[in-house]
Amino acid sequence: MIQGLRTVIYPVTDLAEATEWYRRVLDKAPYFDQPFYVGFEVGGFELGLIPDGVPGSTGATAYWGTQDAAAELARLEGLGAAVDSPLADVGEGIKVATVRDPYGNLFGIIENPHFDRSKVA
Image (cartoon, rainbow, N blue to C red; front, side, top):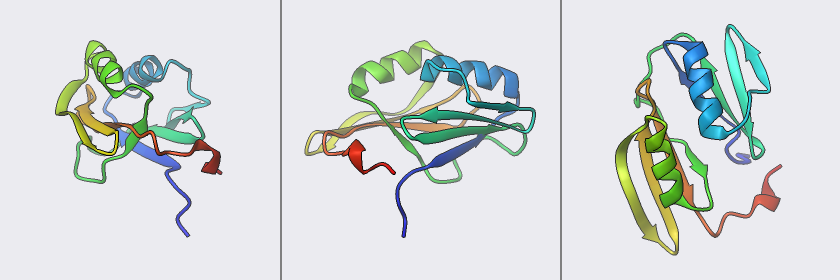
């Protein structure tokens, strides 16, 4: 049974630079930092970076939770992300947007008042 989002892995061309960018985005240091993989724990989930592969949006879009999507979108833009899909209210108080990180990866954000963090296991 699928239990929920656990890890999203982004390929990057410069692991050290990407690690620093995501450290600023997430406002925390990685819990796992090796030349082959960098992992950040984010509210019970993981964002991973790998130094090989081709950055891009050919895979699924992962949406990362936030309490204020508009403020987070502005913060991400300030950190060098480019808006891919502007903030949209998709109904029932749920707001989403996507940006491209400096490496071309799609990074989604979601403000979802219905998400129950107590279900994260």
